[in-house]
Every structure is written in C-alpha cells, then in structure tokens.
Length: 138
Image (cartoon, rainbow, N blue to C red; front, side, top):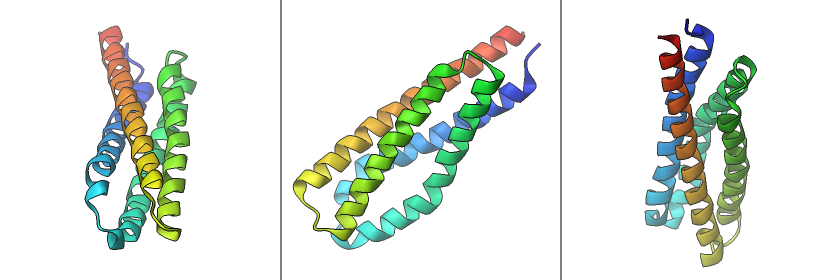
C-alpha cells in the first residue's frame, strides 16, 4: 500500500521543484536582456514570489526525509541549491548597490546556471521517487 502522506509531500515537491526550475531558467535566459534600471524591480519581484516556493520545497524535502530514508538525494540537492541561491542573491544585491561590472554579471549568470541544473536534477530525482512510490504501492 502506498504511503499517502509521503506521496502528497512528493507531489508538492515535484510541483515546487518545477516552479523553482522555471524561475531560475527565466533568470538565466532573460536577465542579460534587462536594462540596468529594471534590476531592482526584477530582484524584488523574484524575492517575493520565488522564496515562497523555495521554502515549500525545503519543507517538503525535510518531510520526505523524515518519512522515507530513501529521500537523501533530493534533500541534499535542495540544500546545495539553497547555498547557490544565497550566492546568487548576494551577487544580485552587489549589482544593485554597487556598479554592475562584467565580472559580477558573469559570476551571477554562472551561479544561476548551476542553480538551474541543480533544481532540474532535483525535479528529476523527486519525479523518479514519485514514480517509484506509485509502482511500489501497486
């Protein structure tokens, strides 16, 4: 029989991982196209909207780990992703409050690329974990 609580947390995590992945890919694709005057507005908008989903994803990662010992990989990926998100937001703040140099923008872009790969890997892991739960429960 399928563990319903674990399955619900896994489904929520699949959805939030997909949202986080698309939000980060949006940063990678569209941030270089912004003019400097839009940096602050983009940062505020992304902080208010994306942080909620990153937080929910972290809560689901902890809940999945508590409910199943097999959820270590998604748990580790989410917290490595949080570290890279912190670095990314630091460089974004640096661009806002100091002069945006090519080096800082390049570092921010690379950090966002790593974040997008991490969150996509998390999405794949959680999706596979969800499929595994369904097939074990059948």
